[in-house]
Image 1 (cartoon, helix red, strand yellow):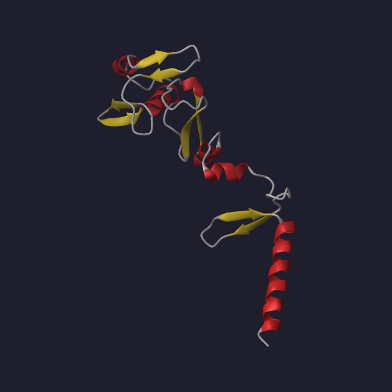
Image 2 (tube, helix red, strand yellow):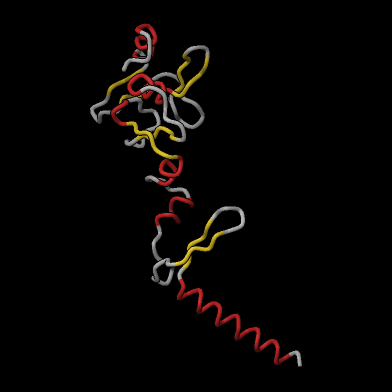
Amino acid sequence: MGNLTESEKARFETRIRKESSDCHVWTGPLDKDGYGSFFLRRRNRRAHRVAWYDMHGPVPDGLVINHVCRNRACVNPQRLQAVTVRENTLKDSSTVSAINARKTHCKNGHPFDRVYRKSNGGQQRYCSICEAAKKRRLQAKWRAEDTLNV
């Protein structure tokens, strides 16, 4: 597609070191998060997004660019893919939300088979077996408290 001019592409390529792992590592400045930074058309831009733009055009609305190789300094367009923010957050991530999203069973080994929808738009998964046991325990506790308060 070639969305960069020849001079922009030449300037961009002077800051790339190609490695045997197929990563094209950005040797220019990195931002605080470890992503390459490239000054293009009067703005600092993330280098991997510039590489994507040159190969594929603008990033589609609602999508972000994911590093398949998990190397934030890589600008090889063959190792980049456009994904949703959720996919990018959950894929190969060690964040709490990613870890919990990958869980399919509760701590007692029962499958998560129910979803509770929260008022803020979020949701929480739970298993009906543990939830029923919790309800029975609470009801027994409340009955015991009622008999003590007579």
